[in-house]
Image 1 (cartoon, rainbow, N blue to C red):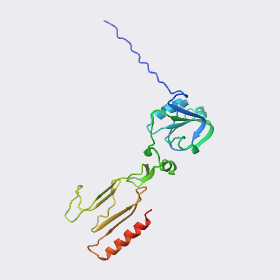
Image 2: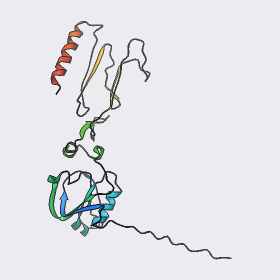
Image 3: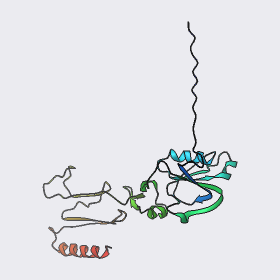
Image 4: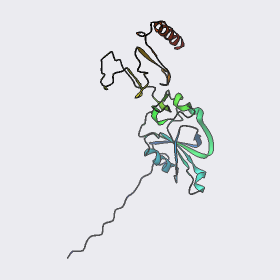
Length: 220
């Protein structure tokens, strides 16, 4: 009976060198902002490897002196590049800064936060509001869905009332007459909800006209 062969699997990992064309290095510098996450790394190239595995990461700060502690998270993954915002690149002998050249990753507003709002706005993104009223960094677009409903009409969502949805949330008061929702065009924040029953109360015609003029006067 033939003996079974003993197979050994050998794996090798190639880390990027500091002078690799896929990485640009700025020794003794740290980029101050757009932090995604802090991790543990044993070298600058090891920190870059973490970056490669995070789709939002485009550059890193490697804290060299952080190696003195085995539990220190000394690798900072970043989204914004110092080449775009050199004013945030500071001299710090304890750090080395790396930019990921390959693969090319474009700016992604969803990778930034609105905490302070600085980098979100500097990157020409917008701090909009999600369905729960929390601020999020986006490309400035938000979804609006409007459906009117006359007497006896049933709209595609099987509702017999007017719908005004902002990012999936219905803000319409769904009352008879004209329903309005005032939205900040820069961030999607709902400023006001109001309705006018011009059928049941003729005086509301003038009230609606005054509302529209007042709202228009506040527009940029």
